[in-house]
Structures are given as structure tokens and as C-alpha cells.
Amino acid sequence: MKNFTYTILAMVLAFFLIQSCNKMNDPANNGKIVATKTLVKIYELDSLSLVGTTTQDSVQWSVSPSGFNGLSHQGGRARVLFTKAGSYTVTASKIGGIPASIVIKVSADSVSNPTHPIDTPVIPIDSVKITQLTGDQITLHPSIYQKTDSVGVQFNAITTNLYCSRGTLQYNATVSPSKSFVFDFLNVRGPIICTGTSDIPMVISPLPLWKIYMGNGTYPLKATLNGTTYTGSIIVSATTVTFDWNYTSGIVIAPKVFNR
Image 1 (tube, rainbow, N blue to C red):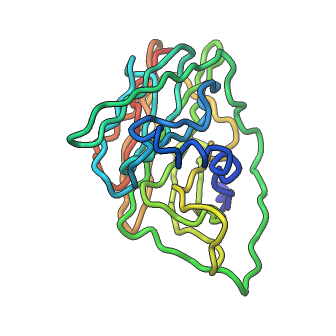
Image 2 (cartoon, rainbow, N blue to C red; image 1 turned 60 degrees about the vertical axis):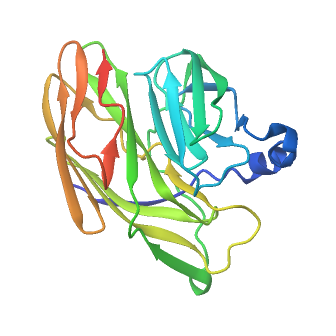
């Protein structure tokens, strides 16, 4: 079993944040949802903000129709991806406030699956700051791709806490010959001085694994964060792919069931 340590640059949305700055600062937009994109591809991550709120506010988020999305949020900020083409309504409501909604359209195109590890720029060693993931939660958003008689899986990973937008989430990822998946989330590597953009969640989209195809069966899945190991499995049947994962904190998975 080969062990690859990948350091992948988080999805830095600085350009889009700058482009949307005027909208977010416009008092007329208070209480509205602003999205980086309102037309996305299947499995493409999108960023949303409830204008007039911060990451410290208590905000409830939901997506309709449900069952075809992965949603991660902190206060008035959210990241979402979709696993099926269509039109979806994302709703956010600050406690005691009026709900706001935005429609996100998902095309039939899909974000390409990785076929090789991705190399990213390295910050000079004398200007590096290592930030531990203490108190953080990571959400794994799985997706599937299919052959006639087998299915493959890939994962997007999103932190709940916010870090410098120039940082990188460091981790180990292994897949054994028997198709046992193991992830170990380590820390965030970033510059000592972070300037230019707001802090953002660290995102790996997707975790760069070689294409792994699985027939019907059960395949072990293990992930480690802050010294705690979480275990579950991927169950492949003729009609569904189910992620058997019984955790609501630490490392969580959503959604857990896909139709083939």
C-alpha cells in the first residue's frame, strides 16, 4: 500500500470575494443571500453568504429539494455542492429574522474526476505558520461515478473553522489494494502574516485519489482528526452506494446514500 501525502491549495475565492464586495456592503442587500455562482456543475463547490451576518451569528441553512446536495456552514457563510442536475432553492434564516432564498441551477456537466495527484505552490519555509485543527470539524461530501458493472467514489473535504485564504490543508490519503480508504487530516499550513482577503474554510475539491472502481461489496473507510479515529464503510449494491458512518461531529459525511 502506497502512502501519498498531498498538500493541496484550498479553493481561494479572493477574486470572487472582491467582485461581490460591493453587493455585500450595499445596505440594500442586507438579509439577502449572495452566491459566488448561481449556475454550477455537478460536484462543483459554491460559496454563499447571508448579507448582514457573520460567522458568529446563529443562522439556519437548508436546500430544497433535499437529498442531492452537501451543505457545510458556519454562521452566515456556507459551502454547497450538488450531486444531480436541476434547480435548487437555498434558504438561510438568522434566528429571529426573515428567511432569505436564492435559486442555484446545476447543469448536467460534472467536475472532472482526478486522474493524478495535484501539485501546488509551496510557501517558503521561513514564512510558514502551522495551525492545528483543534476544535474543528471536517465534512466529507462524497460523490460517485460509474462504469457498467462497478462504481467509483471521490470526496470533497471542507473544514468548519476558517483559516487564512492562502493556507493549505495538509493530510495523508491511502487506498489499499483491497480498496480500504484511509484519510488523516493533519493541520493547515499557511503564511505567518495573512493579508488581502477574509479567512475562509479550507477546501479540498476533490481529495486527489487515483480512480478506484468497486464492485458490489463492503469497503472499510477510516479517517483521523485531532488524534481521534473515525471508522465506517462504503456499501455498494446493485442499486445504491451507502456510506455507513455514524458520527455527527468530528468528521461527518453528507449525503450518505446515492442511487446508481
